[in-house]
Image (cartoon, rainbow, N blue to C red; front, side, top):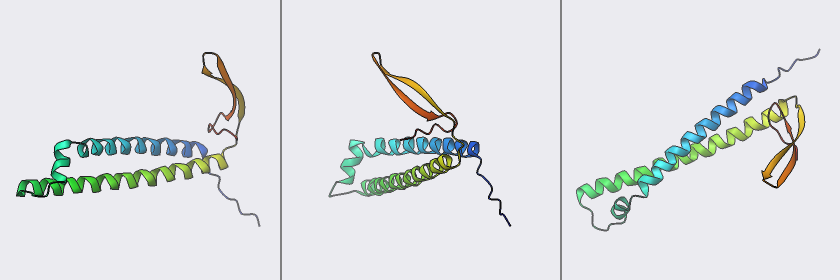
Length: 125
């Protein structure tokens, strides 16, 4: 008895990878905003002050939380990046590749020949 293993829809995987890339892009924006907040000199002075008033203590706590939140989003970025790699591997394994040879311009005087799949954009090594 033959068992039919369902094939994975490559177009779905391509869409999924595109969505994950969008999530990664937005997470990078969030991390960049945290970097701007952390990079504020007044905030850094508060973080490293030995004598803190009640207001400064609150700001220091908020600053520590901001650093922790940034770490959280960095960990999410790492997870999403790995997911993108996994989806990309699934795409390459399940795509019925249609390879073409093409030439791309490197600069005004130089071009390079490349081979890639027109469906998933995979380029063989």
